[in-house]
Image 1 (cartoon, helix red, strand yellow):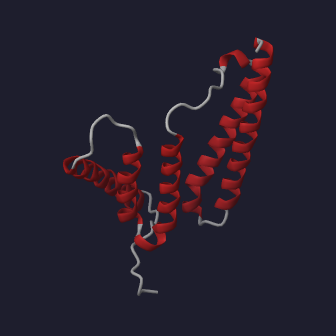
Image 2 (cartoon, one colour):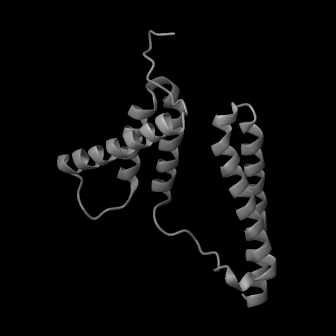
Length: 161
């Protein structure tokens, strides 16, 4: 494939990807309007960053296409990526029921299990990574709830309303 055709194909792909992510940024900002003012800050920031980075990608695709590396076929396990995505979706679905802390610790362990490693997972590995995940989740929870005043989902038992 000639360099000119190669840049044209990548330009189209990057432009479409940029438009999709810019639309996602607009959707995130639009959806954040239903939150109270303190709860909408993070989604508005994320949506704005998505739009700005999308615009940068589209502009770079047209103004300096040689600056963007060629798009290559994904390497590695697509099934691991899919599994990680499904774990995140399950995490989101279980948040209102099991709460932020418990769901996040389990999700941390499950997602870390999808990362390729030459070491075999033993009980000690689970305990160490579980401890690290718990510390990170609790620190994150503490920061969000105490310093930022963001209410995170709490565990709700099945028989509670």
